[in-house]
Image 1 (spheres, rainbow, N blue to C red):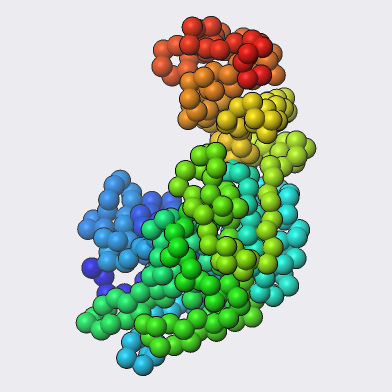
Image 2 (image 1 turned 90 degrees about the vertical axis):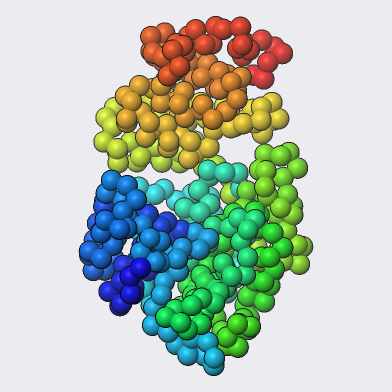
Length: 398
């Protein structure tokens, strides 16, 4: 186990900012952290004892704790009564993604964050429609620090506020992301908040813009100017009636009432989604992707309309389209990229989605006759198999 110095602290905190919750880092990731944050090269981490794979090293093996998707950093202790408090001063401003295309509530949320006022926002919407990315890119453009917490049903007060730990034989309180954000006047992003249990109620007073009395140290922490809370969720905190988002919980009404406004994030328009894919293909250096981009957007739009009408139970998200673009870069084959990216769905839905794409993109029919789905069956044979429901059948979903 390492003896943490100021040089260690800078890298550990920088790693937490770029890769929240990650304990293992490849050499390329370490290089990126050093390049983008200016922290010292962590030669201390790149030792055989801390290696967990080829070119991959673990902070946990080095003795650095990673709690609930937030790397907690041992830094210079500050005394508050009988217990020392570990705090840090490393910036956690998100990285600007130059390919990002603003849409939806971007302008409204940017106005809220740039105001510097405390104004809690609850953002709800189906998965893969850019809720979290929107918050992070607003903070990046405004150069605002953002502490992101990925919530699970196990998330508790220790994960959010902080916990006591032993350091060199002394009891030390290691601050969690909530107190760090409050002290620095940063944005606190609570991701997937509808997965939380009632343990999230520890944030009640904080959501009112008040301070927090830390029972473990006796200190009252007041929020600095600029501090605010933004939560994202797939539901409105009322649970998932259709079972689509298993694991989501019904949040306390009094807790939800403390969010000033709720933003409902929709998928982007066809024009915006096409722009998103064009930028993604440009980043991937894929040439002549125009027709493929247009067809993917048209295909996803038809599927979503059927989903909203209740005809089908699945849809294609913007994130899924980006995954298809990335798969196409690797495999250089439209149908193979699509097939592999929709394989997460049940066989009937997968077959229907594949067949629908061949109706949108005539060129894909010729490709699908020859290419295989990775299991020894051509797409054409799969569509014509007895397990497949013909989308042209009036009893079928389309």
